Image 1 (cartoon, rainbow, N blue to C red):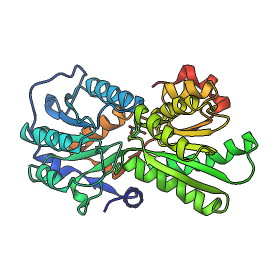
Image 2 (image 1 turned 90 degrees about the vertical axis):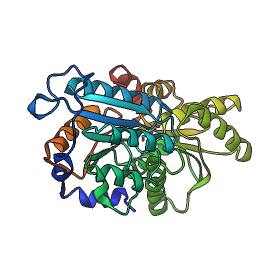
Image 3 (image 1 turned 90 degrees about the horizontal axis):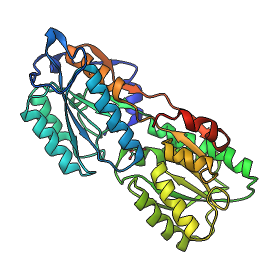
Amino acid sequence: MLNRRKFLTAAVGVASAGALAACAKEDKGSTGTGSNGGGGGKKLTLGFSQVGSESGWRTANTESVKSAAQEAGFTLKFSDAQQKQENQISAIRSFIAQKVDVIAFSPVVVTGWDAVLKEAKAKNIPVVLTDRSVETSDESLFVTLVGSDFTDEGRRAAKILEKVLEKAGHKGPVKIAQLEGTTGAAPAIERAKGFKEVMDAEHKDDWKIVVSQTGDFTRAGGKQVMSAFLQSNPDIDVLFAHNDDMGIGAIQAIEAAGKKPGKDILIVTVDGVKDGFVAMSEGKINAIVECNPLLGPQLMEVVQKVKNGEKVERWVKTEESDFLQEQAKDALPTRKY
Ligand code: AHR
């Protein structure tokens, strides 16, 4: 099993993509318009399998990948898996058949990749993970991960909740509802883990997660699950939503139940997309832990290095910030996604 902790250890060292990259074949067809794309004037072909279009974060991530590939002068073969693992596996098999230079993908869930990754390895096509990690018994099946530290995002959510509770003057026990991301996905597993870690270490006696269920990272999921939460637990104090979209769906459910989001129920979300900032500037979200979707430029840089056979870090991490409600109005005009 591969987890972010293992990545952290591995990140101290570097991984060589040379052996895999050396035999990768190139596709002469091109949609890229940038100035380079690989040694010898040949355009690098990147096969990219995206999770889907479940959230504002994902839309921004897709745009970032597409524009950065264009900028880098790569030929991008892009495939949208519509949140289904079987679609991602088919897309990866198709990239292998097309003999792309490098395969990159954001795995919808953590398990079940070994067989297809072995097929890529057998054809000497290097694989770069982006955004989300996988669990595998053979860490040589991919070169690196370009993405965020989701466990730390969970920890940061718990730490910022301390400030939110203090600001709201909340005293006594805290009943928390958690809207989880897609079941089995790295950000759902790791954000829950990081949050619980801080809760167990520092708030064992006063904080309690009273309900927790997946909303699949979508607004519709967030609304539906929050409405059920409110029926079974009308006295929830706090909502921790694993992304802004589920938080925004939950706000609709809270308002429909006649309560005030951000006041009657304090809300902390993850991502920091524009719609999240709008809700925060309206006082409906209390704090946001940023998860940066603009991974395209970093990803293309890594892909080029992998193709060149250069050494890359085992985990290329993304820089992120946290935002409280009072920062929302100032930050909103400069949000890039
Ligand atoms: O993997 C990143 C997560 O996936 C984002 O937090 C969420 O919005 C998206 O769907």
